[in-house]
Amino acid sequence: MMDIQPVSETALIIRLGDHIDTQLAVKTGDMADHIRRSYPSELIEVIPSYTTIYIQYHPLKTDFIELKSRLQVLVDAFFLSDDKDDRDRKVSKIITLPVYYSLETGPDLPEVAQFHNRTVADVIQIHSQSTYVVCAIGFSPGFAFLGSVDSAIATPRKSEPRKMLPAGSVGIADQQTAVYPSDSPGGWQIIGNCPVSLIDFDKAPMSPFSVGLSVQFQPISRDEFFALGGTLWSHWKSWIRG
Amino acid sequence: MVALEILDPGMMTQLQDTGRTGMGYQGLAQGGPMDLHAYCWANYLLGNRMFCSQLEITGGQARFLAHQAITLALTGADLATRVNGQPVEGWRTLHLDKGDTLSFQFPKKGLRAYLAIPGGFAAPTVFGSVATVVRDGIGGLGARVTKEDSGCLIRQGDSLKTVSKEVFKPGINRMVPARYIPEYAGPLSLNLMESYQARAFSAQSRKSLYQTQFTLSPNSDRMGYRLAGAKITPPFSGVISEGIALGAVQIPENGQPIILMRDHQTLGGYPKFGCVAQLDLNRLAQAMPGTPIRFQPISFQAAGQKLKSFYSFFNL
Image (cartoon, rainbow over all chains, first blue to last red; front, top):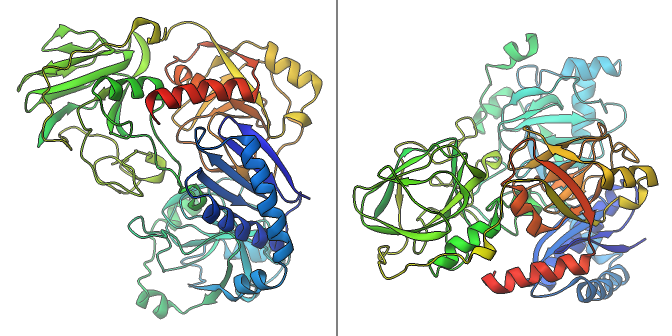
């Protein structure tokens, strides 16, 4: 399935599917990179997300009709050439993020475990065993939505979002998982903390993530967490009780 | 060189340029002037390029002190501007002497005024722009700050430096022709292009969207303008998160439309009926809460032609 529709005077959306599928996210991310490289001056934004690629263009440099026909050719060629090489290339790029899973960094571990009638150790093991795919980046700068969380630990968001979470918090929301790159409000179930900085506005790229990349989590000890620059957040208790 | 010192930033004063583009794929909002029409005229009056940064003064009650003789252009809302206590007109250039105080009172018409100087204000760029996006903690004078203190807003005591060495241009005395000065009071009719999930809405919902007179909710900000009125029933509660365009009209489950403005998030999962024509957002950005608002359909072509003329005129 492929469909290109205008959404405003300066934007269009390419739809590549209608259900969430991590393989499609890999393809969507690759294609977005390819499009961004192919038309650097006409295109202002190219934003892949799960099943779509949103494109904002400069209204004096191109228009919908012209862009649609060029994109059609590009996307068709991409699908034909793709299959093996591109996907292998992308899968070989795996980011490994260290995570200190603990009650002092992941206050929702007991809730997630209880929800599935499992132990906290099970939750940690299952979460850190899977390889995830970046399906979208948004919500806040550098916030990567990773799919898919094993249904054995997939847990709904908290009924009441927290007003503030520390940067590095690793959360679960249904079948998605993510690391909050900066201090932020949030309603995800927090199970650990990644001490590595995931956002830097002085660097290009500012974030290690791009749609389609693979991500793994590596459990680390309390000592390793501190050695990597991790800090404990003293506000959990008041939020938990409150 | 320090041009202006902030004695009082008023309700909210931000540094803005044409926006931080090309970083949406990393989750960065573009920001930019809420009223691009007024912003562009202010730069135009001074012969500036359009990316030259300006102050967006929202809600008035601000006071600035000139540290040197300087030429300004002032457009947008009528915030009852005064120089040393004497009223001055907007939509034109004006000259301050060293030691003059420029002040803004409560809004008389519109909400946001734009203040430009020759060459723009000096500030560190982040990904090519100084545009302030408070939610992302980017922009303004300090390139980057913590979110807690919303420090990227202009604060009392800030000194605004100039990019250009020559900022006093007594020879420049220009005003915007009256026909290009919008009337900021009164009801609004917004041109709407149907797109995104429009076809999935029921005939009844569609009819009701065009027939309802909404009012602008006070719960509106640089991210989104919320409307209150008849409930528009969305066809489903959510869609797979997808890229959002400026002006997109989201219909959440409560049926009250949200029009996405300059600081809108890059992705969203609410059903969307389409997009408001970008030039209409400028006038919307100046509307006070309670303003009556209606939608009327427009074709992509008609809206596109108007936007192209605007882009060509201002060389955007």
